[in-house]
Image 1 (tube, rainbow, N blue to C red):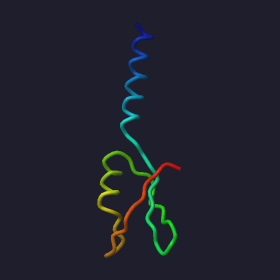
Image 2: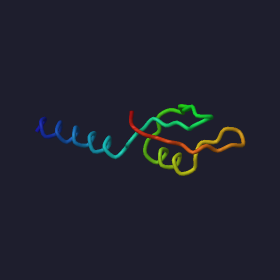
Image 3: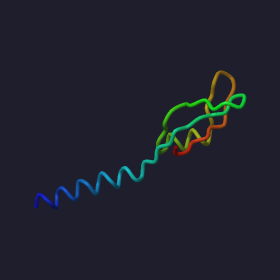
Image 4: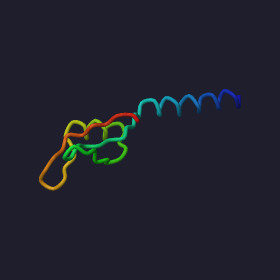
Length: 66
């Protein structure tokens, strides 16, 4: 019974981690990459769709695995 429970817990953790993809993100400023950190899941999708605002300027964001 303990082994079955352990297998179930491990499976659940793997299933959750597979759905939540995280990537390092940056935007370009005068030819240089400005790192803005790691974003995951819905936050990642929203950031790529809407961009990253700095003051009155919104920059296109690029997120990818390193």
